[in-house]
Length: 601
Image (cartoon, rainbow, N blue to C red):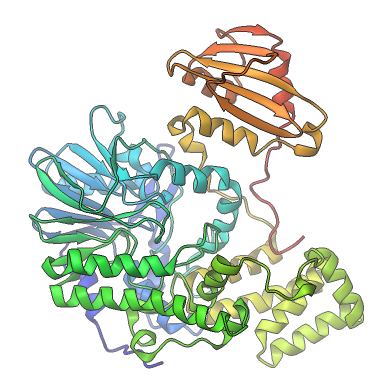
């Protein structure tokens, strides 16, 4: 590895077009609570401390830059106001907002900064580049009065994927997200040092206004507020529903999150569907052919733009080759009999990729991305029969501790491996000690110290955050998870999706002892939904044709359903049958713990 720390091109590009910013860079909600604050990152102004990987420190210095930036005439970006960027395109009568951040407060602050400089232009359209929360969650900050007749453009499948990721698995993802992003961790030489993709994630008001215009095919052209846009569909890349697009008038290419200044995730550590690096590489190559050779600038939903057609093609070619190399070499070694961890241990990027700043593993890593490719093709099972029926973590830990000679022996051996510099195996041994005896103070302290050392050495920001959050929770206990991505989306969900959120909370073993049918007649949707509880499963049938005995029938609207789900009961709702059936249903639902344990059993 020969990283060129004298190369300042990224810093020049990150500063290019700067106009103004907030001072201090601190955003609060209506109650005065802080939702985003970069004041703790002043340590990035000094030399790199021994507790931060120098390469990650450099990336954090770039990510912390914030403010309003001019990309080209008519296109501006708000950067460093959240983990993601918000882009503003000036149209004939107002402005098009691309990706309004995670939180309404941050989006509103960014929009105000723009308007203070460029005039009080109204929002005439919104574009969501893809289905991840940091690219739509702050939409209420740019459309505080709702959508009205303003078009909202998104790639086909956006709503289904946004719900799948942020609602269905939202509790687990939010909990793991606190580890991945170091949420609540104090920034500093021994704390959070960016996420690699941005400086930090905000935690303000989250919402979703459903799109009104679907982008369905590559080459589709739309004129939005007088601005012509040509779209490229890129499903299955960084998100299941994603798109790039080109502004011919501005000679500007929006790359969504398909090409940013780092190696991205093929399987994000917070959890998601495994992404397809083969198709990802293909779509980057397609973007080069379709747009890059005619573009003067390429910008994305994270990091800083790239100017100049030759530079854009070079940047995209590196990104294209990076994902295909990981894919092809993993498949090659997989077909030679290696499993995921074995491939991750031996694979090396060629120097042309390994030495490029834009291909470094600040957010994704070669190690966990290779394992993701293996998982995509072969799943969790490594083919060894002993892996078929392993004990869960705690039961396994008890047996390992007993085999090694007791808890004191395990702690002693774990410390010895750590002292010898083998932090990886020390963490493995001490993890067993903690899971075997979760209240053992010495075991937790030894593992916490090991995690801290691993974090200090990590080039990958999300690995650092995972290690240091694990260290903190072992020492101080679980901190409440501040993220609740699904909570702000309820009104945007379809009725079927709302019932999905109920079905996945049904406690199967308890529900298997009960059965009933409820029919919901929605007058505003001209739709009937039948819920049937059968064998512990809540079945949803839309506009049923079959005859059945119905225990409860309700005549209502979707807003009234939202009221029922919020605990308002059946007041004012016409119904026949036994209303107690509804309470039976709600009595069978589990309420997941958003603060479940991770580094302890």
